[in-house]
Image 1 (cartoon, protein in one colour):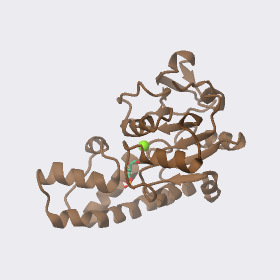
Image 2 (cartoon, rainbow, N blue to C red):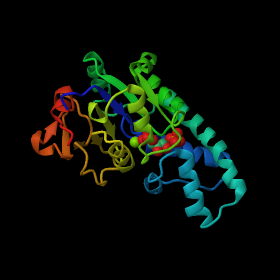
Image 3 (cartoon, helix red, strand yellow):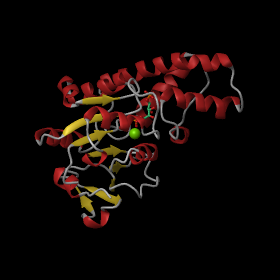
Length: 257
Ligand code: XBP
Ligand code: MG
């Protein structure tokens, strides 16, 4: 990847562990407020994550776990309102500082900026969810670090569709091989692969059992110099140490095939 020009970051699960202790809790609060007896346990939420997008996830749950067939139209119609309430609870949690960035994320973003690499966000969540997370973890100025925010506000087709990554390539004016994506899930990886963009996977508890054989590298996290991370697989795994800190030197050794 000698021609590496831009790093494209997924958000949920990649920049921060927002799912189990963030969105999930917020969904449950929204359900309770609406008088619904829906409760998404940690385990159930892991199964629901197969569907990207909060509104899509609720509809999937309604169809497959509540209605077992055609759902009550009134419940279907409630989904946008539930999503708005969920997001309000989610923002409250972020603003209270309850969710931090994953190891190595702030370090790598700062290093990339210093080196003149271009940065973009490629996510299926909304722009406000991204800006609230960035503001609460890295401060207001970090919103300006990203040349492009490709979110659900810009692209409605959700991962595994490559649409959000194609939008990035289009708007950055770059070829896929000039970019490296950071993802945490099979849906995210499928989106990058379909767009032809090499990907580094940082797994979390929900996603570690996925099939990431097409990734350039699979790691536990980005790691820190004082706390390196474990390499779990990927095409470049044999060429790097078993334990690494994901820094710019390492990224440049990854070669897309
Ligand atoms: C992850 C998602 C999102 C979040 C919830 O997006 O699938 O749906 O779970 O956010 P990514 P919304 O990993 O691409 O950042 O409720 O805003 O959809
Ligand atoms: Mg993700």
